[in-house]
Length: 201
Ligand SMILES: *[C@@H]1O[C@H](CO)[C@@H](O)[C@H](O)[C@H]1NC(C)=O
Ligand SMILES: *[C@@H]1O[C@H](CO)[C@@H](O)[C@H](O)[C@H]1NC(C)=O
Ligand SMILES: *[C@@H]1O[C@H](CO)[C@@H](O)[C@H](O)[C@H]1NC(C)=O
Ligand SMILES: *[C@@H]1O[C@H](CO)[C@@H](O)[C@H](O)[C@H]1NC(C)=O
Image (tube, rainbow, N blue to C red):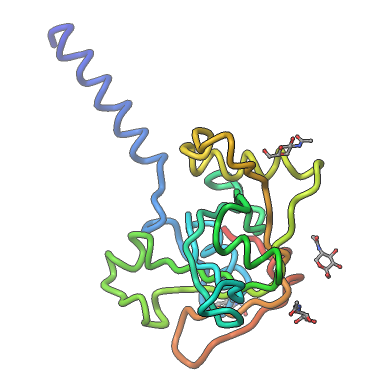
């Protein structure tokens, strides 16, 4: 074997190893649907964004539901804590709603991952696992800042370049209720306690 062939063979072996190490969401195993809290943790971890519904504080829809997209992360890949963290600015329309009423609902769906696409699960199908959280958005305290920053910036590197004059702050959803749709037979609920105790993988 020539040296060049040997080097290229070594490179292919290395590439193969990298491919085998990286497990995309489509292949990471979703927990069985009888383990609802684990499913919720799985969905929360694999989603990079969600729809956040607030009670609008803006005319002409003041007092009405208002859903908007937010980047979210519960931890760097493979290290989910279950806590949905956000990077927010009060210049944002929904964040202004939260200043009047911090009650919110966050929806995350595996429709945004290859999991549903590869299996041809329509986003509205219960098989395309999705989770709805309700709770309150809270600014994280100084102790939790670094955790929130690592969770978000590792999954959303562009955040580091967001305009510095926007007064970004780290926030989290303090979850009070959880609904899970991942199979036929109706929506299921889990408590925040069950959710945080569950081992997602
Ligand atoms: C879920 O079902 C599997 C078998 O289908 C079983 O092994 C497992 O113990 C069940 N888990 C719970 C939490 O009931
Ligand atoms: C937020 O939700 C809680 C619990 O559901 C409720 O008690 C509270 O009144 C709500 N806050 C506002 C401002 O609507
Ligand atoms: C927490 O993060 C915010 C937003 O990036 C920053 O303004 C604040 O100084 C940080 N606090 C600490 C204690 O690091
Ligand atoms: C979430 O909110 C509840 C009730 O408002 C509060 O008791 C609890 O300390 C909060 N949890 C966290 C993690 O901030």
